[in-house]
Amino acid sequence: MPRAAPIRSDPEPTPGTPGPTLGAPPPPPLTGRVRSLATIGAIRQELARLYRLTRAGRMAVDELSKFANVLQILARLVSDGDLEKRVAALEAAQEGR
Image (cartoon, rainbow, N blue to C red; front, top):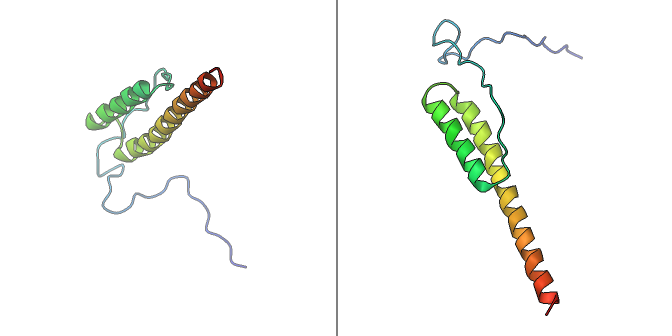
């Protein structure tokens, strides 16, 4: 059975992509307080904040894409939760008649 190649901790950049010598230094790590994402409005604000960071060059586009996908899933879950509460309230009102 052939042995797998060892995993390198410092992979070489793909040709054509900025690396340590070809492009600008990596952006500083994102820090700060994490806001509550319990409402669609809060999720929208967070997505807009990340978009502005990306436009300013403080976040990589691929990172924005990952966060945007997660935020989209969260927005769907919040929306579904709100819909579930509304249906339950309508059902409860229907039973009370």
